[in-house]
Every structure is written in C-alpha cells, then in structure tokens.
Image (tube, rainbow, N blue to C red; front, side, top):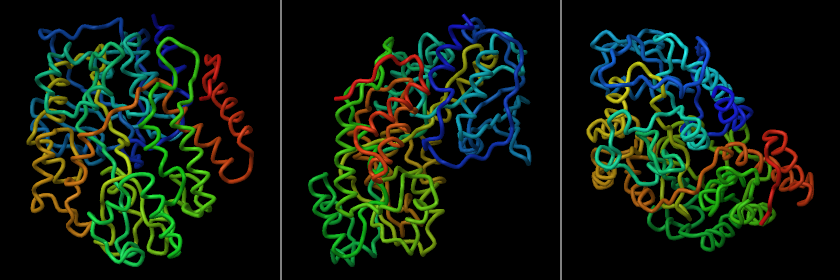
Length: 474
C-alpha cells in the first residue's frame, strides 16, 4: 500500500515548481517532521468516540490560513509570538507547519509526512493540510485516500455547505464526486485597470463604460488598438491572459487512468492569440511571463500597462504591494471572459486523531456565514458563501476598497462567480500549465519556431512525468 500511495503522490507532482495560486507570499521556515512509516490510508481511527489528541498539525505554504483561523475561529485563545503555535480554549495546540511553495518544497514535505502518517505518533500526525487548485486533484484522488471524505467527519456537503459556489465543490471532489475538501475562498477574476490611462485613452474611467470596452475578446482587441495608438499596452504579458483560456478547456490534460496527455484546442488558441497580440504591440515584449521583476514593475506608476487580470487575492497580494502611487488610481470591471484563479482547499487528513476539532475548524472557516463575512471585510477577500457575497455586492458602505478609492469590488466579483464553470482537473495540471507557458514563451520571444516550442514542451513533460507515453496536439 505504501508503494502504491507513493506512486500516486510523488510521481504526480513532486517535481512541480511554483505557480501562483491563492497568493504568492510565502512566510514559512518551519519544516514538517517525519515519524514512523506506513500509508495514510491504513489508519482510519477517526471515530466520534475516539479521544482527541492534544496537538493539531496543520500543513500549509504560508500564514494566510493561520491568519484566518486566528481572526474568526472562536476557540482561539492566543498565538505564540513567532506564529508557530496557536492555543485553543480547551488546551489543544495548533502547530503550524509551513514550507514554501517554491520549487515544490511544500508538496515534497507534505508528501513525506503523508507517507509516514499511519505509524506516526499521535502528536506528529497530519490533521489538516491545504492544497491549491493547481494541484488539489492530486490530493483528492480516491485511490491515494489521503484526504478524508467530508462525510466521514460528519459534514454533509449538500446541507452544511449548500451556500458554497458549486464550482468550488466540484474542484474539491474526487472522480466519484465525493467531496474531500472545503474552502473559505472563491477566486473569480476581474479586469483591474488604471483610471488615469482610461481617461487619457477613452475620455472616461467609469467602470461600466470601460466594462463595455473589454466585454469580450473581439471587443477588447479593438480597444487594445486604441490603447496602442495612445502609447499604452493592454496587458503586461501573454502570461496574463493564460488563465482565461485555461479555464475553458473541455478535457483534462490527462484523464484518470490514462498516460496520454492531450493539449486542448483552447490552449492552442492562447498560443495563436498571444503571438498575434505580441506582434501587434498590445503586450510589452520586455515582460516575459509573470512573477518576475519586469512584471512587478509593470504595476508601477512608470508603467504604460493599462490592465491586469486578477482575483481578489491578486489585487491584495500582488498589485497593491507593487503600486507606488496613490490609492484610487486602479479600479475593477468585468473581464472579457469569466475565469477563476486560485483557491486554497482545506483537507482533513486520513488518520487524524483530532476529527472533532478538524470538523469544527472546517465548518467554522468555510460554512459559517458570519465568519466568512468577517474575512471579506477584514481582508477584502471574496469568500465562498453565495448569499453573503450577494449581500456584499449590494452594500457599498460595508465593503469599500481603500486601495481602489472606495470601490466595492464585490459588485463585479459576484456575477462572475455565479457563471464560472470549472475546467476538468487532473493531477498533472500544475506541471502542464507551467511547462506549456515556458515552452511557448521562447516562441513568442522569437528564440525558437512553433514546432520547436512544441517539441520542447514534449521533452519537458516527459522529463517531469516519465509515465506519460504520448502527447496529442489538437
């Protein structure tokens, strides 16, 4: 069993590098410990009558979830000064085991702990762990069985989580439709634009009027030409639009039980359109991808970039820290296409010795409407409660964004979230999304031709996932 589990976990994504998910800010230095040997699925003593442990071990890649727990979980008494231990009212300790996402370190440490779960001492067992949308499917895999079905905790997704957005529940489920995670987040994306550039190019910065100019791809292409004539770029990089195309694929990169990787036609549409936009001057050719210095600088006052495509976390964690001007210069409006980017999923680990605490934490953070509203107000985060977000969309007084000059972003996020249909997931998503962009970035920059870019992608995929036997192009 341990060998089988290792194959499912480690082969799928242990070599995966960093991709932005919920946020790109990692704050961890503490490493997860190893204890005992065995497979997680061999220990399922999580009955309601079992005595709870004294330590709740929670694995994550940054302190975001820790902050949310401390902000709204009513059982929190205090947290240590270094942030590594949170003490609950009943004396239980939450130990925060943080490892950075960079270079796949978080997944490697987590996978090692999951492989040792069955024989680990009670206080060393993983109780809760988090995953991102890019690799959540790896951990909801029914065969791996490292994430408990929520029903095994006594959580009924149909009733307890009825207010969640449907696509987040689908993302959190295994191939059989069994939900094995829950999330406090919903990450619909918007178009975030500079008001000063809008006024110069179009004579208005009104979000509704700008929304009409970017309402679909054909329209925004015409708008991009007008921006170019005024000396502006529409977006910083071809990577900025990838998520919108990637959210529209009709088939998974790799179907369950198969070893054939299929590149969806929508991905190749992104390649074609990106090359056209880059050659036309609608992107800044010096900005090669995302999460680099040039991309960060494209968000500064000196930049000529009109807009970015971001969910709520992107505005807060990425745009805001890189902006060196006054508040109120940026605003949001509808995107050219509905999309979701990111999301942190909370898993109850199979073999936990704290099922009651784990259940209570998951329900408190992802099913309590009042708590979710508090998170939205405190962190400007679009949370996973349809009714609460609809109320927020209609309440400009309670939900103004200081950074956006008082604009209520929820007014624009809410309708996008309602229309999102999640693309089919696979355990290979993170690697495929990263490597396809890397391979064709060289093509966009004129370093290789189209066929060489395809060949480079094939080579990179086989190196990362040796079990892939064929790559099919549309």
